[in-house]
Structure formats: structure tokens, C-alpha cells
Image 1: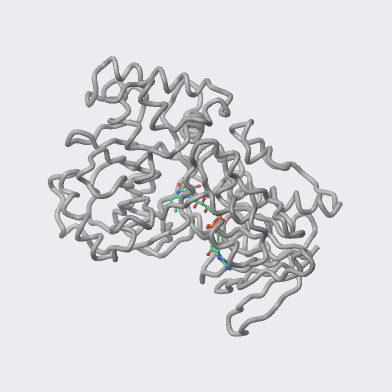
Image 2: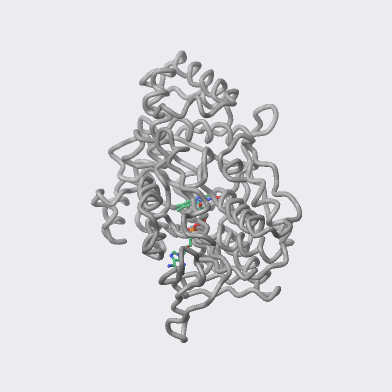
Length: 461
Ligand SMILES: Cc1cc2nc3c(=O)[nH]c(=O)nc-3n(C[C@H](O)[C@H](O)[C@H](O)COP(=O)(O)OP(=O)(O)OC[C@H]3O[C@@H](n4cnc5c(N)ncnc54)[C@H](O)[C@@H]3O)c2cc1C
């Protein structure tokens, strides 16, 4: 088969990789001048850094398997994570479960309830039971308002900004289940993974593999339209660098673009499917990245539980992967997840710096503007689908109503949180579904997922 793949992020490259491994041909078209999509990198201090902070969990078995298949296994480092919470004017460590007991931002009884409910959630195996509830409704009823406001609401706001109160309880459950899986037996310190050449190295290696087997990978190549004839996808209209607009015939097409882009590429998409796509909203990640002479704190992942501070998380990347890898620079992301109704979504780099920087002294009174050597701005529009209640009913099918046309995007990841691991899984899975549809044999198995009951795995397989 000869398959056209729209998008050169984790899902698109994994789909092409799987098709080629199974003995078929694939061509990837990526609109941006680089591969990797949301997990792409730029250069800082002589090394590559993700535009948005990235790490792996121990439960990310698909990414670990892929790295090993590509010969990148030795590049994967597992590093103890340092998580913290800014609450009541100071930073609290949340590295080990004992830190919860030491957290005096709430009373002892509240801390014990918080610990007990976390353990209960981890033992819950049937996520469908939690589907009708929002996390903002379910959690405070179990742990009390004080504990919820101090610890879990900031976590939800850190991922969903102002839409935190719409998030389904199943999403929260998935987060707890995967974080426990990352701790292993005995509740040891959590380890997080990082590919020491950056996530960009994985995508470039995938691209090289595809090309080495006769596939094609184009960057700066925007797909303008899926060519549909008699209800079947038969090709792609693409703007290729230096060649203008051309139409390329394909036996089938896999699209990995966000749900709001997909209908623009397929104007004949039936209304019912289009409505399903429109049913899920995305939040944008707005990121300011600082290159500093010294660290602001020793914490890698700091949730901010103080609404007077205009960002929701501070990710000290070089408290995870040391500054020696980035020419001695200390790298910090100031993060927000925003809808388009939020004025900060439209703010320019300098405006955000003006709004954010005065607050850094709250986190570290010694902080001075003279520590800043450089800064960067990045916005990712399709960063986070808002995973609401009864979300499993909203997930669009991989088989679109157009024959030979398949969709694999982050709105189809559930109940886990979206991530590179699940995009790799989606891409490989959709490639296998496609081949089976055409009656081709498919060899090998995908790794067993960390949450065995996941929709990501069971849907349509
Ligand atoms: C701030 C942030 C932090 C994150 N942190 C983590 C983390 O710690 N760990 C983790 O595993 N994951 C993390 N993620 C999530 C992870 O990056 C994504 O889930 C994953 O990369 C999505 O891959 P994808 O291929 O499904 O989608 P995308 O990466 O969005 O790829 C889709 C591609 O399609 C391209 N495209 C769009 N339209 C067209 C067109 N018309 N023609 C051709 N190409 C087109 C886009 O340019 C894009 O490259 C994070 C994401 C963000 C934003």
C-alpha cells in the first residue's frame, strides 16, 4: 500500500514507521519547517530543548519500546523528579508521599483524607464509574474544600487553566493511576524519563528510518486538501517547498492534525462527524522560556496555588536535566493553558514578560532581572483537549465517514492524559487497523498499556 500521512508529529511519524515496518510505503507531509509537532525542539546553549517542557513516565511503554527499536534505548535516562507546590507564600516539596504529611498548608485531618482518597482512587479499576462526574465536583466532596483548593485544584488549573472545573473525574483518575505506576513498588521516589538527545532526536531518527526504507518525509509541506472521489480518499493536494501545489495519489490517508483543522482539509466531511470533532475544545499552551544565570528554585515541576500569580506552573527544566547540558544555562518555563477568550492568549512575548516577571520574587526573594540572559515565547494552539464528563462518547472514530481516510489525534487519547507515548501508540495502531481493513497481514504486537482498560487501546481494535 502507498499511504499519505498528514502531520509529522509523534502520531504521523509513528504511523509511517509502522506502515513501513509492515512492508508498505508512506509519505509524511509536515506543515512546519521541522518534525516533532508539539514535542519539537529549538536550540539553546548548544543543545536542543523542547518548545514545551517534556518528560516521560515509567508507564510510557510505547515510547520506551519505540526508542529501543530505533536504537535510542541507551539515550533514555530515568531521573528522580522534584515536584513542588507554591502555597501560602512558600514552596512545599511534594517529592515523596511523606511530603504530603509534612505539608502544613492544610490541617492534619485534611492531609490524611487527601492521602486516603489518593490510595482509593489508585485502587479503583473501573474508570467508567467516574465518567459522569467532574473532578471539581467529586474531589472536594471526598477530601473537603480546604484540601481540594490547596492541592488538587492547582493541579487541575495547571493543566486546564480557567476550564479546570469542566474536567471529568476519569481524567483525574487516569493521572493518579499513571503517577502511581511511575513510582513502582513501595512508593519510592517518582522517576521521570528524558531522551538525552531531546525528543527531537527521536523524531529525526524516525524520519531517517522512513527515508532509509524508501518512504518520504517532507517538512514545510502543508496539505491543502484531501482529494475525495466517490466517497473515497484518493490523494492529497499539497504545497511542496519549491514545487508549488501538486496532487499526489495515495491508496489511503492517515490524518494526525487537530480536530479543528481536519474539516478544513475535507470539505465533504458529513455533518455528524464534523459535529463530533467540534464537540471537543482545545486549550493553547502559552510558554515563556527563560535562560537564567541561576535557578529560581530546586524544583522541577512547581504548581502555583496562588491566584495573584498570572501563570499556573513553573517548570525548572535544568533541575531535571542539568544545566551542564545547555552551556551552563538554567532553563525555566513559565506556563499557562488558555482558551481564546483569555486576553493572555493574545499577549505578545514582551507583554507576558512584563506581566510575569514581577511575580518571580515571590518564589525566590533573591531573584533579580539581571539573572535573565535571554527569553523565548512559544504558543501551541492544540495543546490540550478539554476532557469533560462522559468523554468516551465524544471521541471521534479512527475510521472517518470517508473511505480510506483515517484520523489519529490527541482527542482520541482517553482515559490517559495526552502525551507523546499515546500519539505514538495511536499512530501505530491506526496504521495496523488500516492494513487489516485491506486484508494485509500485520506482524508483532504493540506493548501492553499501563492502564489495561483504556479506550485508546480497545476502540476499534
Ligand atoms: C506544553 C506541552 C507540554 C507537554 N508535555 C508533555 C510531556 O511532558 N510528555 C509527553 O509525552 N507529552 C507532552 N505533551 C504532549 C505531546 O507533545 C503531544 O501529545 C504529542 O506530541 C502530540 O503528537 P501528535 O502527533 O498527536 O500531534 P502534533 O504534535 O500536534 O502533530 C500534528 C502535526 O500536524 C501538523 N499539521 C497541521 N496541519 C497540517 C497540514 N495542513 N499539513 C501538514 N501538516 C499539518 C502540525 O504542524 C503538527 O506538527 C506536551 C504538550 C505541550 C503542548
